[in-house]
Amino acid sequence: MAWKIDEIDKKILQILRENADIPNQKLGKKVGLSEPAARRRVSNLVARGIIRRFTIEVDEKDTVNALVFLSTSPHASSEKVAKALEKEEGVMGIWEVSGEMDFAILLSAADMESLNRRVDELRALEEIRKTKTSIIMKKWK
Image (tube, rainbow, N blue to C red; front, side):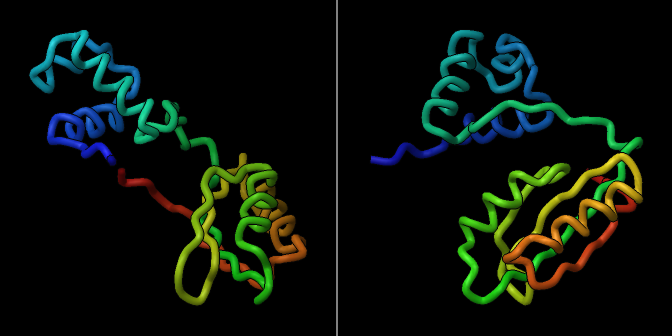
């Protein structure tokens, strides 16, 4: 039987997206629960795999980020491509997508030269047929 996420869980997830380091007492107060109840809710969300990890957000003003869309060869295994991409330096996220391209990745580098070198390294992967890169100019959220 699958457990459903109720409105309190949804509020907890939204608050944790904004600040994963919020103390349980403060979190509980925001959603109308005691500290122990809030802690149990978060632990339950982790145990159920709804929360997979807690992470940090880095100030990106000193980095260059890009969305790189990748087209793979027709017989390439999606799993094999994803595992190869995971090993590449600067890959911050990987998504399999629909449409003309097969994957979208978030790529980060210290400067444009490094970013260009990383895109060239992606193009050199055996399974990659074509790339399309969009530099991220400004992050709004």
